[in-house]
Length: 86
Image (cartoon, rainbow, N blue to C red; front, top):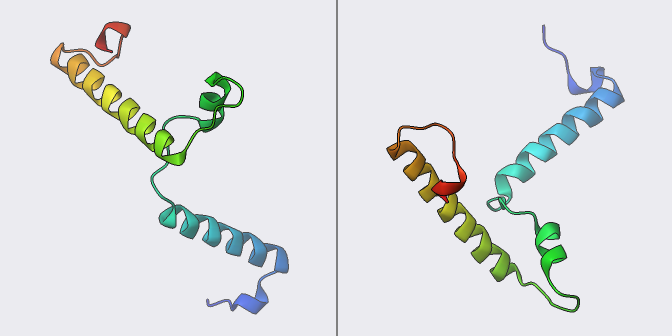
């Protein structure tokens, strides 16, 4: 049973299009940060600016830190990260 696009209600058409656009934009997006930019900006003194390069560098540092902590955790036979892993 084939249903043409025109036979579907306009509401469903919009929902389908919206879902398609979200999915395609996620594929095109650069890697998502594991840090929250707004929280980082809250830590900065007033008047201090933050470049996108700085965010990328901080994100890379956090990813590396977590990766090392996971390796240490696993080498100790644990599945739970603890403060000492960092």
